[in-house]
Figure 1: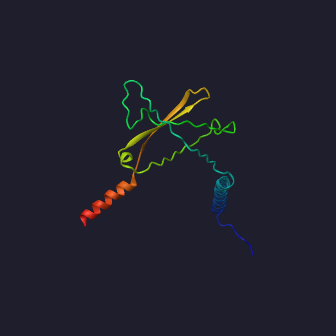
Figure 2: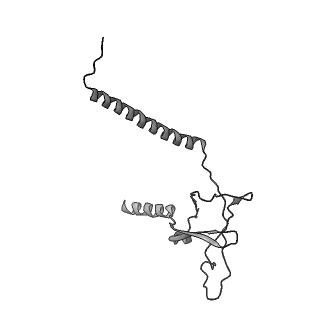
Length: 154
């Protein structure tokens, strides 16, 4: 039995489409495999430290104390572990801060705040400054007010 080629153009088109499909499949497989290897073999590094905030209770002249404090709470922590730096220059990093603020009547009056991160060099000079706004959410008081509103309606 002989195979006859009726249209050589359609045969080349089939070969070209098959070749392109194999190449695209190979590229997608390599991309997925490299991402999979990265997430399985390369660990995500996480570093946590407790922060002890300082409050200045000695007011300078002309400053009125609010809640027996004359300054904003501040803290410093070293970005070195065992004398070697935690960060490497030229790589992107993400800093996440979690605050636990207990539910109290005074804390409920707190609204929007500004969190400032100042990166200091070894001489104590500010090399970079980042500011982000944060809102303190108090779910317990909101839940209580929602419960009282629902009980008034029904």
